[in-house]
Length: 100
Image 1: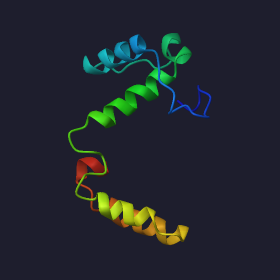
Image 2 (image 1 turned 120 degrees about the horizontal axis):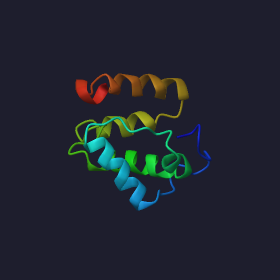
Image 3 (image 1 turned 30 degrees about the horizontal axis):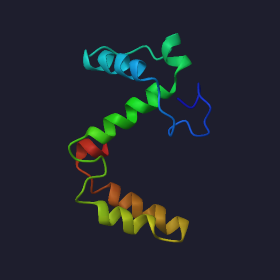
Image 4 (image 1 turned 45 degrees about the horizontal axis):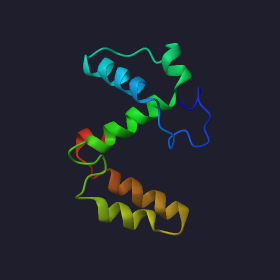
């Protein structure tokens, strides 16, 4: 996405709905979509939009409800080095599929 898009705001802008649906159908049919197709390169935002939708629709968030408070505490640490250490510690507590 960053290689083919304008990085500034690329994850905030939405793609064209029909392109997002086309891309979703390719993933849902267990095909590996060719993201080099002109339709996706011309609307790179459809890729980031589908990615955001995927994470939004997960039944349990990637960082899990159970670890939310620990992640919030970790990112609130002022010292960058200590913050990164704590985030890594909390990441290790994720269930294996989430961690992967």
